[in-house]
Length: 236
Image (cartoon, rainbow, N blue to C red; front, side, top):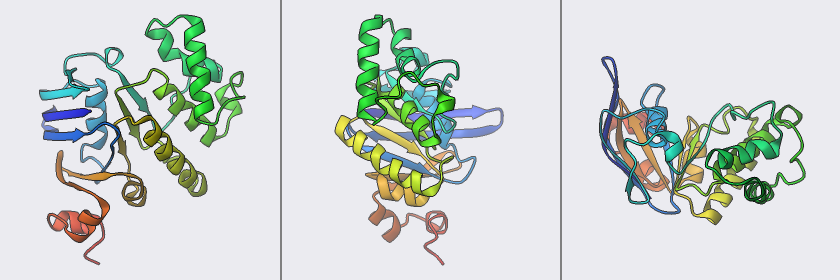
């Protein structure tokens, strides 16, 4: 489970997160939508430990990780730009996090091969990222994120750089994989169709706050305020 308890974060005079509370149940998939600068990516980075919150608490599987650095949190994060190491092979990229966590070579290679098979990337172990398509690179990034069996999976617009057909296919594959592994997952995206089509619930953010969260039907039939209605294009 992912639990955020009234977390706040400011950058100078800008309040990026303003007392945000959120619970993501085991196996649940939550998408986060909102205009640019609303705090979506800051929210993910706070959960991952890449930024320290000013106040509030972050809990993963019941453990308070608020003051822990990223490498001490059992979190898998997939970035928009994939962030693969170009000088490493696919297998080395996927095994890298396991190596940093102290796994021996045999164990980490076994785990890396297993998740590559799970993501449909078996057979590419010896290739370099530059030898893969964008969709393949994203699958490797996902494999790396789940290799250490994380307590939470964080997705920062992971499909934004792909063309529509590949994006739709990978979106469905990602959801199927997440359901199989039952990892609580948060997806940040600008794509409303992607969020409402794949997530169990979608949180709408504005000015550092979650202004409404719910399923696609609830959001579209019962928008909480004029902002949500306008943002989702319901007032047209």
